[in-house]
Image 1: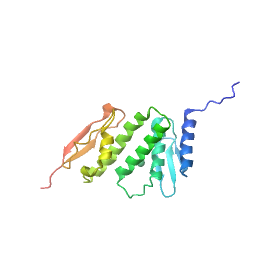
Image 2: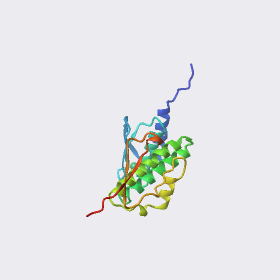
Image 3: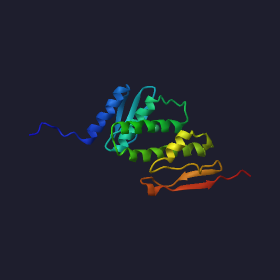
Image 4: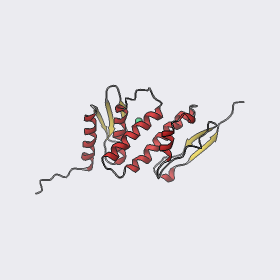
Length: 177
Ligand SMILES: [Zn+2]
């Protein structure tokens, strides 16, 4: 009988996450079976999904990123989400995951959704740093947000599971009478 134990992908991913947590003195308080995550930055505690694929593995690193970047409401939420996503992406690349591009695609849409929330509350997209708009626009799944204008409200339709599901609708904002 072989002495080698077959280590499942999930166990391997969990080890990578635990290593990153230990390196940054972060405690995992819960592994969520159905996905979902959050970071308690001051306490250095995170709740993260059980990593079974590149998407939820990246999500684990995303929550670690919030703690490492010390995100305690000093920055705009889209900047925090951007920084956490870049942290996750760099970690996936550093670990040699070629499929990080799949995560990158989701990461861009996560930042876009956060941006849209700010936009619809009246935040001017002209304030969005060039670094972020360039990151959103580059690559295979690049999203060009140069069309955004203060006179328009932007809405995402449906669930985004693939590039085909993306429908951006631009509404002309109603002018007050
Ligand atoms: Zn986040």
